[in-house]
Image (tube, rainbow, N blue to C red; front, side, top):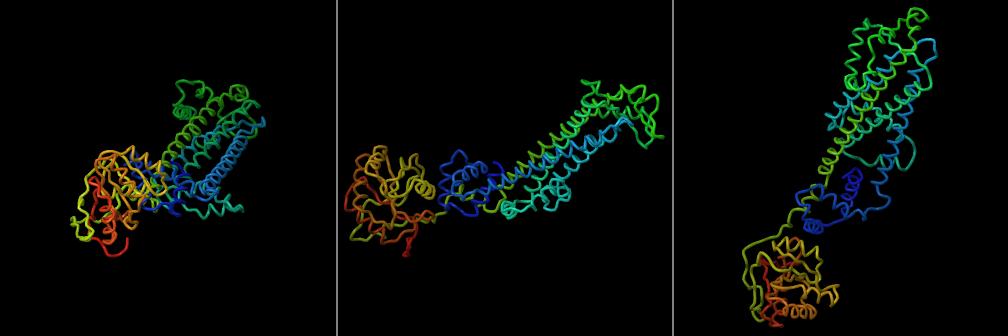
Length: 470
């Protein structure tokens, strides 16, 4: 399940492409997906996906999201590269202060990741200040001001605050990641193309010993396998810069060739704190977005109703069995069944689709391994093939208001030669198959009496028959 599927589900629930009976039939055909709501929703979307109008809103939304994200990422990369060039600009007059670059690749990433963690905890809130302070949020807002029909369509589409917040969080991590990649490439480019002298200087009273201890702690992820990327005490002492006047100390000039060694520490700091940890946050945000997506699927208006229609049997009205009182005395039929068995070798429906047969079987609580549509649009060869596959006891369903014609009677006679017993059950609608008229049942009794077949039985209604229509 992904964002496109979510948008497709929103669109499908708005047009409501399937009836309750069709949804229940779908649930009965997807037995392996039972008790797996997300899998059921996904399969239902795939089934009705082609009923949506083109161009699909999901495709438009995904295209807009991709293009916007790509634009933001490229902007962040360029900004990071230019920022790196600015921080590392060196004209030979004075060294590059490593403190500035360390702030950009260590302090700033850690601070923003801390705020991101808090934002994740507050993602359910529609008014999450930290989320809405994200550069990704405002950069997208500015892009949305651009004219165009796509922006209008996207603006009209609303998603849940939870999903929207996680989208912003994930994209913020991607933007920050590419900003950091730009910084790293700027560092490598400047190191390769220029002979840079690095130094460190701060107004705070920090001794070389204290600074060395701090840098050793900062470098703990790589100091064991890349000790050369940890500034030595000697390098720190030699590169301390005091800005008193416009000239460099003679000692710093003497050791100028060693001052460039700082680049290894800066590169490893960028790779670990600004890139590796950001990649970790990106994967965490991706996981959070997926969870938010799952929750949004299930909390979307209409999705629970859909799952209920897929999984719950359609309600039918049951009561104590009635006698054959509804069959007229002059045209009575002696072979009457008042109660259905729990299972049959097959259930067949005359001019009833297989999905409808599935729903009806579920409603009347009958289990069968085989469901067949016969009659109606079926050819004689197709009906003969069904007969050849039939055996044992067969429950044959027919629409009560469509009284048996000669074709139906001929099929019953042919079927009786192949099976042991046929239970013919006139039915009403899918929700209440027992709701039929008394006069319709009389007509069915008359027709069954006309063929006088000992294998053919008629199923009476098990609820009080109504005088009204179906």
